[in-house]
Image (cartoon, rainbow, N blue to C red; front, side, top):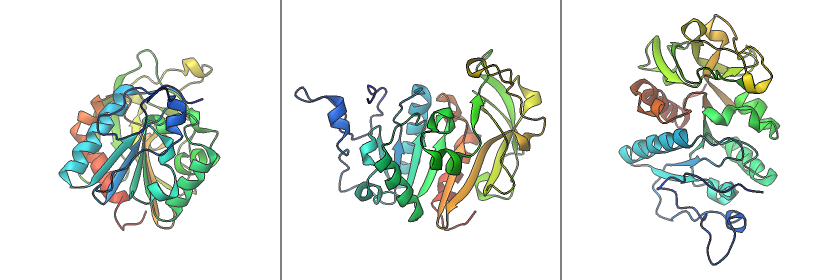
Length: 281
């Protein structure tokens, strides 16, 4: 059963309200109304959560994408209604963002529609919770778009300053990004690094000597330390899951604060421009 909706961003024109006694469940089975005059190209920012909901991070990312699309005269549609994942509505968007999307948010039919859209040349950005451990019900997404499996994050303290390392200085997404910079966030650890034959490029890693990874308290007590080598503890990576589509994932973005950081804003700006460009991986 769909969860009650929380923190809907003001720009979303979704059909999520309860009207004349109609339940949110039945409302969400109908695609949200997307206005005919939406500017093109357009970005869909999707933040439904069937697991943990990062309210602050979702709000921060929504505001960032609103700023970007307004400045660049592009269309934007934000929603928590997964019914937008149908062939007709997806065809109106050039880029889909999973903004901390968590859990089994899409039906099987909606998952197929999204995969078809990407195979036809659609581009994707995933943020923070979109790469957590709640997506194993969708193997293609979990294995192809994400890859490494999330195993936990520090809890004492949860948020720490840490040094991030630019691992792909010549990649377009890393243009203008310093070799090393300090950020504060909830730092994800994964079961493994990006594999050489995985078809992905690691862009940013974390220097484990700059913070305390600790253990996965809520996930069985496994050590969260992956390696002293930042390349073996990835946080941001890209791939081309289909010939004409590009994908970008960033494990940053638990709260609104990263989206106020100029380096991270530059990174996301570059990611939008790269995914929507004709460049290849």
